Amino acid sequence: MISLQTVGPFAAELGEPDDNLVTKAADALAEAAGIGKGASIVLDKQLPVASGIGGGSADAAAALRLLTSLWQIDPKYAEEVAPRLGSDVPACLLSLPTRGVGAGDILTSIDFWGLSDTPVLLVNPRVSMPTAEVYARWAGEDRGALGDWREGRNDLQAPAISLAPQIEAVLAWLGTRPGASFVRMSGSGATCFALFDDEQARDHAAMAVPREWWRLATFLR
Image (cartoon, rainbow, N blue to C red; front, side, top):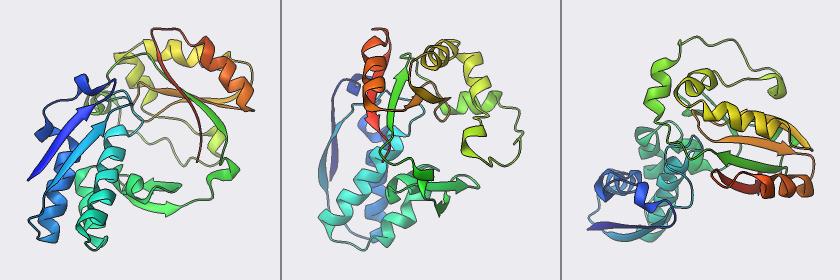
């Protein structure tokens, strides 16, 4: 039997355990491997739900890695199951810098453009942003190759802002922070991020984030 307990600051925003991607990942892995073993899983939910930073996908990938080790099964089963759980799950399972094409599950390793250990600040206006609703408002037009990553864009930003104008306020606020060198919305929103020239500048910005917004000061890895 597989059981899931949720704790942490955002646990109350999660649905029933059977609907959680962690439970679905565990069930799918057990079925793929043809085993009847169980597990008791505790999910400490520290990231906002439906926030565009792949929290649910990362949780599912972590469960796949954990159970592969616990059940002592071939990692190929986790690799087989991951794409069926969501387009972000294969990248989270790999847990290395990659470029995703197609539905996002065809992965190519990248050198991360020399950004490893760059200070980054994540800010979310505490708005839940269901991915399907954002995609429903996207025109479906891919505006060409990314080229230089600093000249890239997020095609989902405009439809996300149409659903949650607070995103625009977060982007504008981040853009005025001293030392912020690059500002974007993450995924389908509503979380936005800024890369900083140094850790001190990032920390000063983090301390100034309005109290009603969620924030996380960290590094790119």
